[in-house]
Length: 255
Image (cartoon, rainbow, N blue to C red):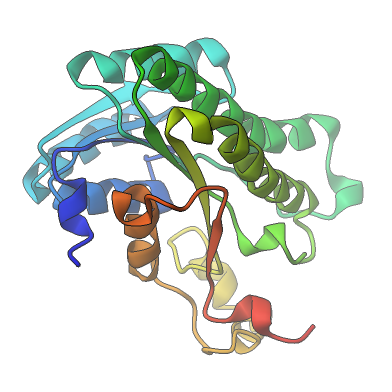
């Protein structure tokens, strides 16, 4: 089965697409021939990405300004994206972390992490679901969670709590919206090598963490492709409320 072919000419909206996994998923969808809309706060990076998506084979690519913590911004972005073609797939990827002990986290920082990582998923998902319900058509939502929703590492308490919330929110929305033909699933990556964490994984602490992964290596963004395409296409048409873990066996390792 060619999962990529199932995204051809489908409209995929990716939040937090200005870097990291969001950018990777946008490129993946474009390479499959999807119509891709990318949203984030860093518009200049999105504009550069759009040209790359066109070159990769996107049916069409566009960028929209998006702050997932603000309902008005979310609704405006989805409305702008939907003017060209109805939305088929929403990828809730926007996220931030804090990397400091709980006693050093301010109220503002805690609120910021929860607002982006959890409230943002809520706002984007409900906005898309209202549009789909009013149009009498179904849709697909893929929420990017984390293995830290299930196991805790040091110095990321707000991030871990937010991702645990994403997993539970995924189940709750899937239960409510199945009757409308709206599927909601989550993807929980393990530790993935990116430019943002390269310095940490070059330290003794980072190297020790990698040794605790049963496969003894960090994941690459492309290691998520199969699971992403499964959840984003009708290959998973009888799946909803599910969280798919892709982590090199990390959750199976001993404490």
